[in-house]
Length: 219
Image (cartoon, rainbow, N blue to C red; front, side, top):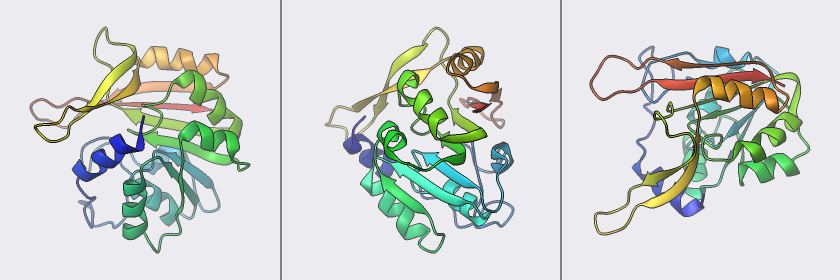
C-alpha cells in the first residue's frame, strides 16, 4: 500500500452526510450502505474505553466512538484522509496518527479495549503480520472487529485491488486479503483470539449490491 493510492481514494469517496436518517450527527456504519446494518454496539464500548480505528479515513466512525465517551485513536497512511478528519471533527477530541497500521501497533505503548477496521487496514494488510500486533495491543478480553466486502468465490488470500484514476492513467494497485467467513474464524483462532465469529450481513434491496462481511473476536 502507498499513501499515494489512498490519497487518490480519498478524493473519490463522498463526504459523510451532516446527519443520518435518524437525525444523528455521529453514527457508526459497518457496511458500505447508508443507514444499514449494526452499529457501535458490536464493539461493546462506553465512557472511558480506549478505541483504535485501523484505517480511520475521514473519521466518521471514530467521531461516533468519541461521542460515546471513548478515547478515540485513529491511524491512517493517507494525509489527505487525516486532514479531512481533522477538519470535519475538529471538536471531537480525536487522536490521529499518520502511520502504517502494523508499525503503529508495534511502536505504541497503549493498550485498547477495542480495535476495529471498517473497509480499512485489516482488509489491506497481511493478517500474518497484523493479527499478532493487534492482539498484543488489546486489553484482556478486548474486542477486535472488522468489516469488508465478502470474498469472491474461489478468489481467496492475497488479491489485487484497483483504485481508478483519470481515463488516461492506469489504475493504482493495492493488495487486499479475502477469505470466506469460516476461514477468518480459523485464522483468528490460530493467532490466539477467542469467541471468533464471522457473518455476511445482507445488502439492502437493489441491483448489483453485495453484503458486508463482519468479523469479531476477543483477545
